[in-house]
Length: 109
Length: 113
Image (cartoon, rainbow over all chains, first blue to last red; front, side, top):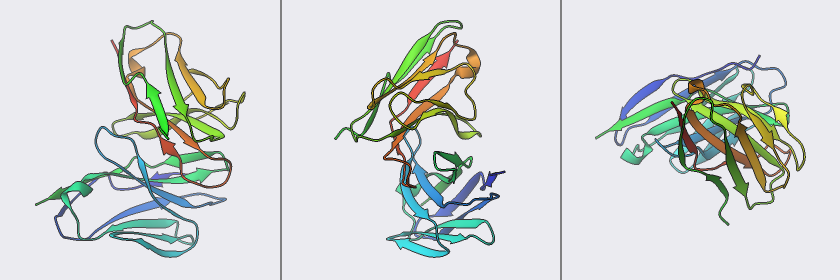
């Protein structure tokens, strides 16, 4: 199957670092996407990992370990505007994406 | 480029009424998708299309129909709305079969009474 698990909610303080984990069970793995979704808005693309390791994009980094079926999104120097839901998703075949239920991050001053 | 647009933005229906949600994209994308998003359930795929004239079922297709008569448009129909179809509906598109991101529309909020 392709169950995707991520924590439901997380809280953090402005300026801190937070790590959002995502685990998946799949055969035929073909990459792991991360999306950000602010309340009442559409998901927007953050990152796509297909090889093991860490990829950095400014304050956001994404890590993948294919052997462990594990990924995380690392957010540094948290800002209030980072309060949002973070969705991980993995392809099923070449046509579809299967999404996790999302992690709601609240950043407090 | 407008990207992906959806109409309407919000709609209230009575049980048993029908309606069509329209998704349009101006990026010449081959693949288009309809999702619903409910609290605690994440994004669930209803139907999708890999090209003009094609459609396929996703995870939760019951009670919905779709059509892709033109490449840029993907229509989602509810023939007889039920309260269980109260949700936020997102359309998305992707360039083609290569693993690239999907681009999402702004969503349609549907309330079925």
